[in-house]
Length: 476
Ligand SMILES: NC(=O)c1ccc[n+]([C@@H]2O[C@H](COP(=O)([O-])OP(=O)(O)OC[C@H]3O[C@@H](n4cnc5c(N)ncnc54)[C@H](O)[C@@H]3O)[C@@H](O)[C@H]2O)c1
Ligand SMILES: O=S(=O)(O)c1ccc(CO)cc1
Image (cartoon, rainbow, N blue to C red; front, side, top):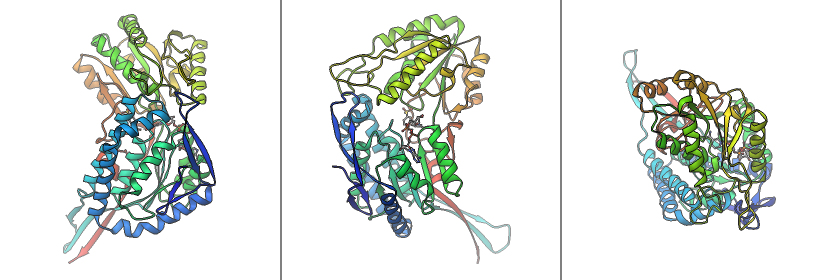
């Protein structure tokens, strides 16, 4: 049994929930505690009580704790990657890579603890000086989705702790294993009781309590648009600081002058790896007319070479979809795309493997138009659609015609078009001859329009959300 971690104690929940392997639904990864609103309130109270000492305590102790967490994550990358692949379904190399990303994030923020700085300025008034400093926000509620079970928690928890905040962490119901393992490592890192708390359980009980509690000063959320809107309406309305990372409908433009084999690889990597379950996945492939047939043939040939199988089997390129609901959603959109007039040029079929799992072949819809639902709504599976463009200007117009603005890419050998695209694409992250998915851990991450609310995550920009600025005037 895996308990919640509240005020330095492993604490049984009010119920339990099994964690099921999507590659083999007969395999139960473990039983995990489920909290209710009252237990969540205990965690919030513990974080509140721990905050004054943690916020003003030794920064060396903070840095040492984060470095210890980083070192253990990196040392156990294979074991934790195996757990992650087993509970979420991304392939073993992808899962090990995610654990390494989590370790590097903790290492980065261990360094940031001792690199915090402020400003000392002259005042416009004689005899007065001004200091601008950053202070922690307080108690931070961290609410995460299932698709990056350890990296997303790491990139919220590490900066929260580094800048002196206390944390109540509520992971997604589908992937408590990696969250629990991370909590276990944090619990042994030397941080005082109450500074970090893990509360597993349903969004409507645990998450909602975090949103409503006036003892929670900030909410950092990654997940769906609908839940994000609820976070904004509840926590935002009561004045909490709110950071939302939500969906994407990320375009990849392929121009006639692109290196075509490279463009095919960039498209396949971005659209289908990690089973397409990345908010940065390329789900709209916007292709200039003259190269469209060759591009589609290239993508189909590459997809045919991919092995869809158990996430942990050697040689698997694409693991299963995360659960039955997501599989049904993927299939619904594939059928909808065909009803809207697309041709299903490849895949989109359930496949049987040696064990019962949620296996779907990567689907390519050709002949999409910008107004179709498959071209506007996030599917969050191994499904991409191809939209024809007349030229670069048309392609850019189509790419920007979206309620989302997270990541966007272009494949071209034209410096002129690449430069124009980087400036005029309305997205938080733009890529030239690089997949829309696959980002560094030390630079800002986030989007525009309906994709994100609040300051960027990651790198030094994380300080914007996890600290609040103070201006001090001193008459000498
Ligand atoms: N932009 C990004 O950085 C990014 C990254 C990964 C995933 N996503 C998005 O996440 C979605 C998939 O993840 P998901 O299905 O886990 O999303 P989700 O919104 O269903 O759940 C996210 C988290 O919110 C919690 N939650 C649910 N109801 C809640 C409530 N009433 N109050 C508070 N918390 C509540 C869930 O329990 C979970 O922990 C996709 O839409 C994807 O685009 C975005
Ligand atoms: O684009 S990816 O590098 O795959 C990536 C990693 C982590 C996250 C977390 O939101 C998103 C995208």
